[in-house]
Length: 160
Image (cartoon, rainbow, N blue to C red; front, side, top):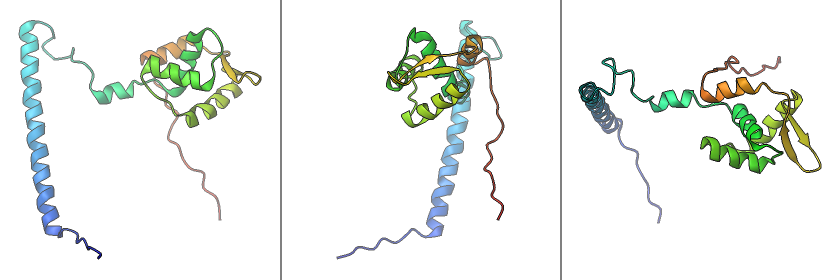
């Protein structure tokens, strides 16, 4: 026996969507009131300036400051003090930055870095070492002081 499922009518979906919009607006208003109350309490305790500038960064701001995979890999290679394999680098990045870089991203990136002489590969042992790289700029990037913008990625169009 085959059961058939009917989709909800557009009218029901609209009513549900309107209700969700209303709930979202109410939640945003509540968050604003809570932030205001937190700011008042902070000023009363003297732990934050009156403009609220001492608040911790939001998740969106923290995500923007995350170092690039390149910077994370170069940092762990520099801190290792010796050659590392790909798996060891991934594990070291997880420990140091609490971020997991997929192996499918690490190998191509290492090849690009090797082409620029920023890392060196020992084919016999399968390990990688730090090459000629400006460690100070990598450290600044890790701390969130350097922001790199390479422009938008555009696909190459083939002429028919």
